[in-house]
Image 1 (cartoon, helix red, strand yellow):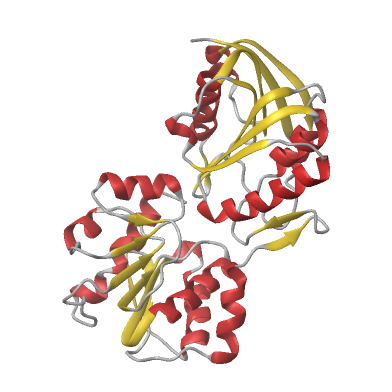
Image 2: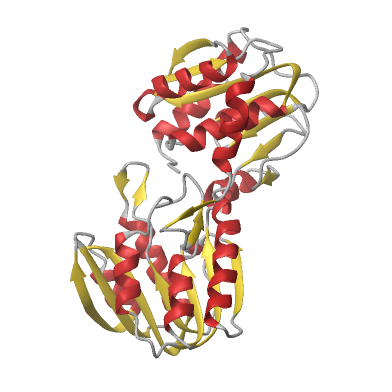
Length: 352
């Protein structure tokens, strides 16, 4: 999720209909924001008791630092106003719209805001289909659109759109995934490359950083019989349930006991210490732009979390210059494989 100007603009625009008087904030605490993000306008307008939902840990942590209580999951209940900051993934956003319509009360409104450059026209059209038409305005290079009070959703669409948020199989049924996750509809090429070159002799405790739906962790369990424990660190809470399911299946297929944890966690804040092996396919985008700082944070966390004798296995786009960070964090760094625009690097001897 981007923390840049486009995201801030969408948050600012979300409150414009309330500033112009076209909509009114509830006098009580009956307001919910789905995919809430921190920002000045939210801190300025806040009222006690608002419910904020955000499944992406860095964004949730930013809200918490500003004093907000945040839920990673979609809550229950009914609200007079439900605000939505949709994602870039169309089907995931359709599910958000459907969830919002089930959470608004009989006289309430649902209002959403999307930057023009991130599919605002399409998002508005989708929401209008579900809600039977919407009011709209444009501000801050965003579209803001909302339902009429008491609008009932199209019953023929609602159930199907709600189901878009359910876990579903991928890779010929080998894994469970969820729309909107990284590489949700396939096994990522880079992760597959990393898995293919991991030594089968890996043993002991393993950490998977930025684990997604758990593909790498499952491959470690399948390929490395001496591995006894695997911890998954993942910032997107929507990935945790599919990851748990996939781990359970991988352990059952392996026929042995492997201790596992699945953690909703921002790797940039550090991980546990003492791992024998750490594997990672770090994210490298912040919004639409490449952001190597994310990968650098993963490298630094791995160096701190690795046992002295351990190894860190990382795959990355070939053009991303992580070598200086790797050399600063590890005494031994070697490129193991390069293929399909990606490189796999093994690092040892972490510098403390």
